[in-house]
Image 1: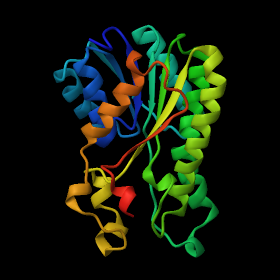
Image 2: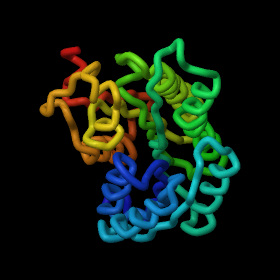
Image 3: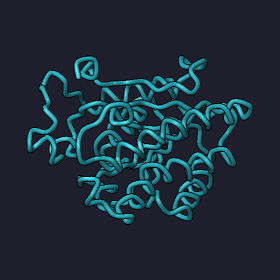
Amino acid sequence: MLFENKVVIITGSASGIGLATAKRFAKEKAKIVLADINADKLKQAETEVRNAGAADVWLSVCDVSNEQNVEATVDGAIKNLGGFDVMVNNAGMMIFKKIEEQTEDDWMKILSVDLLGAFFFTKQAFLKMKSGGVIVNVSSIHAVETTPNVATYAAAKSALLSLTRSASVEGKPKKIRVNAVLPGAIDTPMLWDNPNVKAGLEKIEMTDVGKPEDIADVIAYLASDEAAFVQGAAIRVDGGRLDRL
């Protein structure tokens, strides 16, 4: 088992890509920290992750935009599970507004979750993660190609790639690897609730829609020793859709 006795913290893990990632690591007998702002969904996710084979599960109700919540999550992982070896920064949110309709509050809300949340966890990892640890940031295809009305999300996910590069440079002397994945269209509520998709502004062919498990597999690869020489990478996982946009 690649992750037996390893402790994995996953944000936004109550549903979607985060939950699929937790179950993927659980199959490898990892110990899982499920961190999410939705307490009710966390309890549901715990059952699924335990059933998938996790060696242990600890829940943290965490608002990733709150640095104190982030620190409490990390300290809880150390106290309850003995440390942590993998950090998956997956939590994210979107709003859909034309640029001229956006406000400062809109920008701060998205940046606080999609960018600062990853920064807060990266900071804690650099302070407290075991040597040989791994951070995987979940960015988005919107970091490199985007659609109307999602400027805040696209900017935050692009900045997350920059954070990934910087953290990979500073993490190397600490023996911490940092990489990112860029999911394309993935079969989650975030995709199908997207007003751009509903209005036809962003056209989706079903052959271009991946499963959350497709992203989870790449995250697991990046977290494994098989990716020991992969540092600062941004791996696109979109079924080739971007090649045709």
